[in-house]
Length: 489
Ligand code: AMP
Ligand code: MG
Image 1 (cartoon, protein in one colour):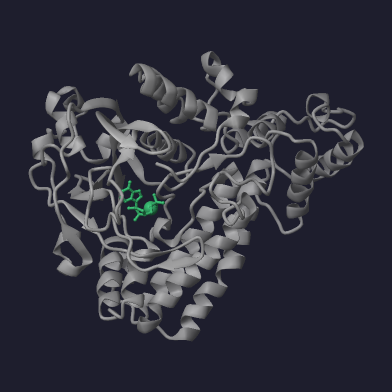
Image 2 (tube, rainbow, N blue to C red):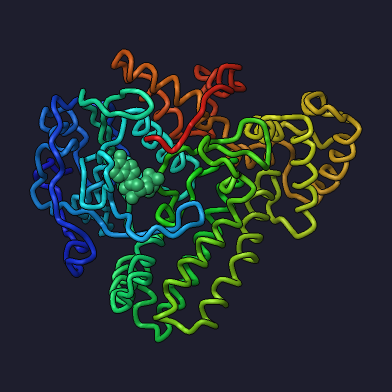
């Protein structure tokens, strides 16, 4: 385990052409204090968790001191935001300190989000508020706990510096870790700015670091695109399966590695509603829950367009054409597992869809209903009253239950074995907005971070029973309906 000053930096992005980024240091902030530290993420860097107790820790991770070996920079990128191309975005408030190569040979970008203005800030302040930093911190780790690819979060350091949003809030810096922060928009910027010679440079960089098995293939760029398509399709299926909405699926927030990336106004659905829109600013529902898989495809087509100078158009089209079947396959697999099916077939999708329709009609909580479904009893004559009574249309439930029971006859094992299998994929605990909101209120108003810690600990193991935390699995309270999350962060 290493001390802070011994972290092993190897900054490959900083060795790319200087036009790919701007070098700059974070802007200092007064009186930093540690809000939360994540030992799981520290382990990825070989960082000794005891280092978090040093006074210097907060200084390093708010950007007041530079870690030896870091070479801070803001990455250049562009992106399609809500369907419109925005030529030059770039890290407006995030600063990449560099990459740490751990003893396992993995590379982790270490990025300070909210570290001050950069040349890409476009008149904004370069800061992030404590509220949104806590949301990203908790959700990225919650996604990891759910087994869904995501960026990670090492810590949050707060400051008293005031930040102006709808109200006055205080600033914080989130330290984000990812194998790479390259986005679809990192390619788009070169395509649209007629810097096509930079496209193979960036593609080779990503391939060498993250798809090394493709490096010697003659059609490496096409195969790279194929993999991004597959990873994105898989990610969309996994989001659907846990009822997650990202909220701002702009191409600058789409990870080239298929990670859940850049947490803003995200949300987990409470009652099942395919039209669920988590972002209060998304008036047209572009990024509604049910739209996400399509948007994944749309975003990939922006990426493919940007890669056209380095691949034949037919190959790019073929890569894109694989998206829908790949997505459908993953979706079937994910949803089949939620029903306890070891091997879901085409015909099982009807079972899923009917159940979802019934849930929608009865306004049932998505997470709680799937969790409860593990208690379904196969025995003929068992009415499964505990489930049945939740549905407004009992006859429709009975009909569904008959087909489900018939389908389960073809599955191995008994009810208990199936229940155990289902409880490993249907989480009991998710980061509902109101849970995050409670943790934020305490942190912001009382500087009490115990609720952040408690949620972080709980959501590391969302599939386990935590009897002392039962209330965290309850349906949301009425006041939760008034919570509005927007792009403001
Ligand atoms: P987001 O919607 O958080 O992904 O942000 C979109 C773009 O706006 C990115 O290029 C960010 O770097 C930039 N941005 C967001 N908030 C700020 C801020 N407070 N200061 C500077 N740039 C920002
Ligand atoms: Mg972003």
